Amino acid sequence: MFAAVLTAFLAFGCCAGIGEVVPVPSKVMQKRIKCTIILPASYDQDTMKRFPVIYLLHGYSGDNLTLVKVLPLAPWSDTFQVIFICVDGDYSSWYIDSPVKKESQYETFIIDELMPWVDSRVHVRASREGRAIAGTSMGAQGAMTIIARHPELFCAAGGISGIYDLTEFPNQWGIEKVLGPLESNRQRWRDNSFVNLAPRLAGKGAALMLITGLNDFSLNGNRGAHEVLRQNGITHEYREYPGDHTYQFVKAHGRELVAFLAAKLAPAGH
Image 1 (cartoon, rainbow, N blue to C red):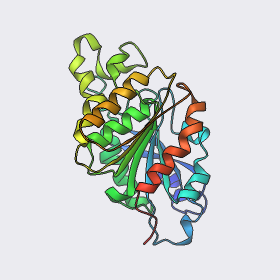
Image 2 (cartoon, helix red, strand yellow):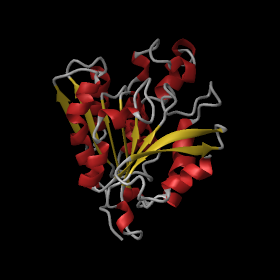
Image 3 (spheres, rainbow, N blue to C red):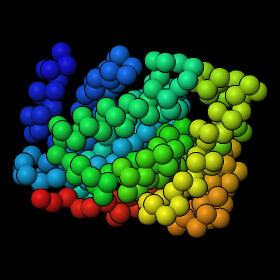
Image 4 (cartoon, rainbow, N blue to C red):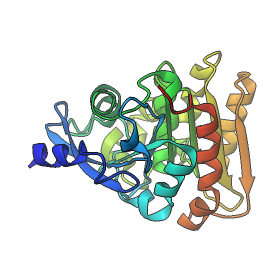
């Protein structure tokens, strides 16, 4: 079944401009992770052309189709000449390597399994200059944490309505299921919060954008991450707009984030 899906995907023409769902094998988690791959309509016109890629991480309770439904990614793929990879984050994985759930190792999956899989099978620019990562809510926290830990692999990252300080929400969204209870694992929670990992990006030259709503319950965490970045001399874009923690807010500002990332990526070419 997997071979058939992959063969169909690699036929290119059948899915250029559309979202093709591909089950990517994970040895570390012993299962297949669904990823939606969106290609520009021109993808199959020149097999030597390589496109920049943006990895997109959904929020809590979502899956690999969530952002495909919320945002017009197919036309944006054409407009910005980028490939989108929408990852299934298993509802509430928080995109971390869980010390509690050994079957939930999503950072390792993205870095050590998904990216090499994409680099070897999809016509992407397989370099730092050709990769960006972004997300919403849980996915924004995941994207920013991943670039903080792996700045050599991505040139840009961004988030909308990010939950950047996990310790603010000790009983919410299944965080304790992947990190253990906050009361007995406070340092672990801190070590997995972007607000504490942000200083690692000093001097790394990554392009960063944080967008949040003035009525978002994560506003304090966003302002905290912004302040940490500022104090560490890390250049970034930080924007607050009217709105709260909703898909409507994501729809309103998704293009702004994608345009920012696309402008920082190496353009499509040979």
